[in-house]
Length: 432
Ligand code: UDX
Image (cartoon, rainbow, N blue to C red; front, side, top):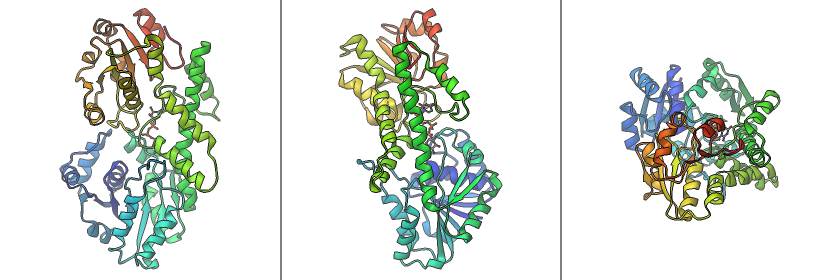
């Protein structure tokens, strides 16, 4: 099939390449010229497992092109995916300006039947809204249908998830469009759920808010574990064996970050407000997370009271391992609090030191893990990078002024820390 994907961001790029890999002809339209040049040369703008290989394979097979020519993209395609950003506004509402802009632009080029697919995470009612907008712009109603098709890709596993997802959700109000989308996704052999556009739009928010709530629940429990001497990993394991609960998303730590959970939980609350539904559980999940992500600072201040002029090491900056993304990462909030208290930060991350410099230009970013430990009074682990598992604890002890670790991702074992005589704090597994 001939497909146009608008936006070569995270979702748009993966969507383009996945459809191209399946033998479709994909035109990915992007505004950023630099990005287009890089992509057409086979250089991915983000780090994602398998992305470079897939991009080059699709370019070599001539199944994908990247361009800023929207007219070409629309006129040469049957299905148009909108995959532009829908960031949070300050009040938590969804910023629809990019969607509005794209819809208004594509309306100029629709001369024959097209299916417009909303891939961006958008509020309930957007499918109807886009339809209205296109009609208002003068597009004939016979010439288009609008589908809602939210994505559930995890960063770091996005390509795997596109080909092996748990479900594909399609919100439709036209049999003709439904049949074409069904045909497009059929080769992926993933369970498809066909429903109304409103239901599809809500599934995305429901899914992310539920997972975020699960994380906040286990984190609150972890904090209690630390007080009563219980072990959160054993509790999570036991909970997970009950298949009504499932073992996933029960890993205690310093909370969730990233581009989706913080944004989508807030957006669900905003959507609820519009319809007088007060999402108290989701509100609490956010509140718990806001406290959880700065928990290491409280632990440190309980021990030292005054950390002015003291060096604190931050290991890991990204919101999770195997990505270069620091959006809403707990590390940012920890660094902010530490700076407020006058601490000197030294940090290390295998992927994201350039990114953190954009937020904190004056902090000390090290190219080497061990350099970031020199003279420090505490190491806070913010990301569960594999590299940290193999830290040589003897070297760590010699580098640090005082060997203290706050393990925000519970990557270490209490017994091992005892053996090395390190002052160690976990999230819900006790401390030494
Ligand atoms: C998430 C959803 O999983 C995905 O379906 C959606 O489309 C986009 O948002 P992503 O943001 O890539 O994906 O990350 P995910 O792996 O879900 O983790 C989110 C955050 O929760 C991370 O900060 C992670 O460290 C944290 N987390 C996750 C926990 O603290 N504990 C867990 O048990 C799981």
